[in-house]
Image (cartoon, rainbow, N blue to C red; front, side, top):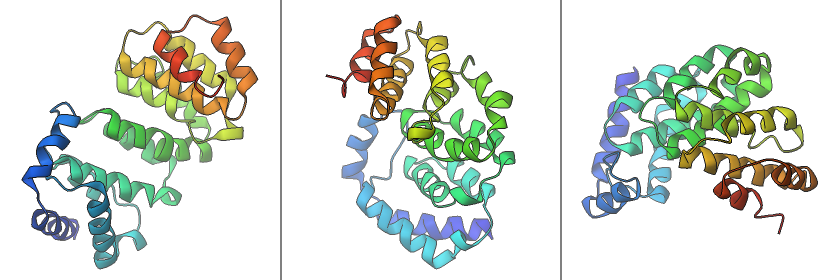
Length: 223
C-alpha cells in the first residue's frame, strides 16, 4: 500500500521535473542533494493533490512512508515527508522520538533539521516532557552536530512555555563550538526567545562569552 502511494507521488513529481530549476536549487544546497527542480509553491500544490488522492492524512501515522521518501534520491521527497509530518503532529507519540533522531542524522542539512527539531521533536517533548531528560539532554552534547542543533532549537516555537534554564544550559554546553550551524542555532534560539523575554536574553548575552555570530543573531530584536 505504501509503495502504491510512493508510486503515485513519484509520477506527480516526475511529470513536473524541471532541469532548469534543479541546478540552482542544488547549488543553493551546496550540491549536497540532487533536485527534481520543483519549486516550493508547485510542490505544495502537488503535495496537496497527493494527500487528497491517497487519503493518507486520515490514516495512522506512517513511518514507513516517511522512510521511503527519505531514502529517495531527490530532495523534494524529503520535503514532502516533512510536510506530511507537520500535518500529522497530533498523532505523534513518545515512541516516535528515536525515529526523529534517525531522520535528523540521515541526509542531514539545515533544511530538514530545522523543520524536524521545532515541529515533531518540539511537539513530542511538549506532550511527553520526560523525553527531555531521557533523550534530548544527550543530544545537546552529542558528537553529531545536527543533534546538538536540534536540542538547541526544539523549543523554538514554545514562546512563553520556553524552559529558559534548559535553553541557556544547552547554549552554554555548545558556546565554544566553532561550527557555523551551532553558532547560528544559538543566535536563532536567543532571537526567538528575545521576543518573549528580551531583558533576560540581553542579560544572558552580556554575561556570557558567545561567538560573535551568535551574539549578532541573538541581538537582532534587542537593538
